[in-house]
Every structure is written in C-alpha cells, then in structure tokens.
Amino acid sequence: MHPLILYGVPFSQPVRAVMWLLLLKKMPFDLVLTNPGSKGDNGSRHPDFLAKNPAGTIPCLEERETGFTLGEAHAIMTYLARTHGWEDVYPSVPTAQARIDAYLHYHHRNLREASVGLVAPAIRKDLNIPDVVQQGARKTLSAALTAIEQSSLAGHGYLCGDSVTLADLAAYVEIGQLQPQFTNVFDFSPYPNVQRWLTRMQQVAGHDAVHVVLAELGDISQAAPDMDQIRAANIKALQALKLELSRL
Image (tube, one colour):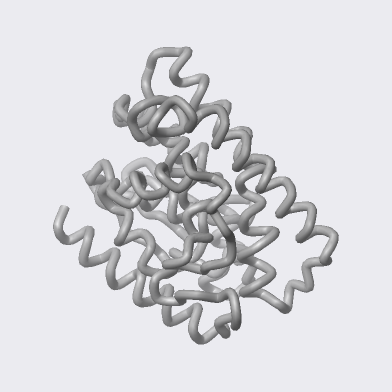
C-alpha cells in the first residue's frame, strides 16, 4: 500500500487532528505543505489543488492508489476509521458512533471558536477580526467548555466514554492549543474536568509529534509571532513528523 497524501500545514488545527489520527493508528502518510488561502503553486487556491478539493481548504486527503480525494477533517477522519476498521476510535455500534458524530457536528461553531476568538486574533493581526466577533467567539467557547465540563467529562474520562475517540482528537487540537505550554491565551482554572482531560490527552500516542509547531511558537499572549517564525515552526514540525513516521 502506498502512503496516503495529506495536504496542509501543521499549524492548522484540523490538519493536526488528521495527522494525530494517522500517527495513532500507525498509518504512513506524506504531508505536502499547502499554504491556506494562497493562489501560489503550493496554495490551497491554486487550480491544481482546487481540482482535488473545490472548497480550497485544508486538510485534504488523497489516496495514491485510487486517486480519491476528500476535504474536511471530520469527514476524512470518519472515512479513514470506517475503511480501515478503526473501531477503537470510531465504534461500529450505531449508538456509540452517533455520539461521536454528534460531537463532530457540534464542534464547528462551539469549541472551534477557540481559534476565531483567541488564536487567530493573536497571531494574524492582519485579519482585523472585529472585537465583537472575538468577544462572541470567546463567549461561545466558554459556554461549550462549561457544557463538556458538566456533562461529558463529569462522569467519564473522555468526551464519549472511557476511551479516546475521534471526538477527543478533534476537540483537543482546538482546546489544547490554548494551554500555557503552547499559546497561553486562556485560563482553564474554572474547568477542572477539562484540565484532567487535557492531561490525559497529552499521553495519547502522537501528541508530542503533532504539537511541535505549537511548542516551537510558544507563548503568544504578549507578542504575536511573525510570518517567518510561523513558517520556521511549520518546517520544524514537518521535520519532526518525518522522524516520527520513520519509526512506524
């Protein structure tokens, strides 16, 4: 079997989720650095990339053997789990699968707001995200964290039970990036169950390799990295990923 191709950059939260799943399941792949929003040769708006993923977003998965391509991180993750029988992270039992699917749908306009309200404004000042949008995103994120604090994580170790599933991988790349050892832009002290979950997730195989890019950038709470620093962090992350893949 030829390695899968994954298009994207390690700094992207959805790309990290797919990378983490592939590493966790020891599935070989090649990461092709793809600049989101760019029309350049390696950009997600280049005609060649749009032929693979008309939405022009990352990540995008490509199967070398079949030519099949697929965008959207959660669609990619569920597709991979179904086709490879990864029932430990995506059970075939309809009710268990439905709970994971429910979280993956919920994620987009809830916990995903961590990037809109906290990370993107700190790193990409040029985006000029209005204050009202940032404040709304932070409010939505806090409400979502309260919901999982008082429900999912109140009685279980993970979002959908007592073992890691696709829901946890998707959620962690978004929430986990806010921790002090990474961007340091959020106070988790009101959420003890979430904090315990974050600590457990750090022990999941592939965590460190997937988060090299954030470790390289470090604390952004006081000063934003420039584009050269972001590029350098992505390159360092790619090098770390290749080393991790060589060990599979």
